View (cartoon, rainbow, N blue to C red):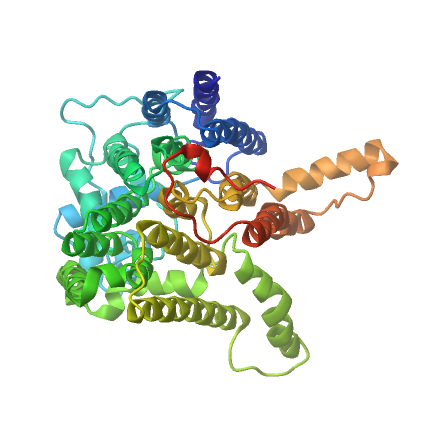
Length: 522
């Protein structure tokens, strides 16, 4: 049964590979291709859930988990990125840094029009750099064709958000440059590096779970996750790097290596910012010396890039923080039902307000997250004063809860952001988050052309009066696909999360048998 599930998931991924050329460097793809991808993802998720159920009952084989995990990633590595283009920014940033330029100074749009840039000399230099041809000079053939992505794409032309300077922290930029130095412009090298970090995370989980008294087969939650496979092996997102570093920091804490854990957690913050949120979770184990090491490593990582000034170095990140909103849940609910009514409505009536709705909502969500962190710190301080021990399972639970709160309060919940939870889900396998990793495929409805749905609704209404209730205008369908679909995505998740909160104990003692750590049952 277990091997059959692995083979079935591999068949779905092969269909996915065959479908991926229909997304070749186009955002969005055509309607049929997007719906087909969403259906295949849903099928893969159902197979994955069946495999998780086998593990929850004490079944599964570690060698099979590892074999199929590697096979799945090898299958998706040559695929076209499905509805993603971040990889092209990685390739460009790597080229910029490898040639000695600061990637935070000039946006790709400035490179296209150097005379309009605030830094014209740098923009002109990068304009010349962008024109350089990087066709292969040695052993890597161009595999581009009808089935797999080209090795050397014209990535500068396909960069998204071109007017925004890079938002990625220094270690991520260094990895981009490393990929460029291995083979300039090679898409496969960049993806392979992030798949390597992905597999290293799996290796750490295999090493960590027995130390926690858990069945090692729970690593399947990460190894076979369709979300992890899609976002790392297919889309090549850099998030596999911070996920690996956070998992390594947790492993080092289990091994009583606080200084090395501090260094690793700091490196995680230099690849993506969210690991800094785990500093309060780990602080009791790290000690003040570890916190000082953490701060020094982060400062040393940013120091080489701050010659242009903090304002210029953080321009892209500030734009992201101020303007981005996508697929949020609590943030969107608060914005649309509260602040949009309290702030925008007075404006519509000719009133005046001091702050816009989006900024007010972000301020509130930040305050709530800060309150959660303060409450956690107070609880940890109280336990420290009482000299109550704190187990590795406690740290994993606190990490999962805090990162989960970040995702629920965030204005941006991209699918790959959920990957940060999976190492801790292998320890605390919460059904709600596993469910959301499947439902989040609905977020890709954002890319569906609303005009196609409007035309289809018109034809259906003409064919049958029973279907005349279907909206026939593109604006209505745009609102449905961009916003209302979130109810289908998040209502089941929050219902299950609430049920788990009522029925599942917050802490469990370490278990030596996998059945003692089943997923919660009604």
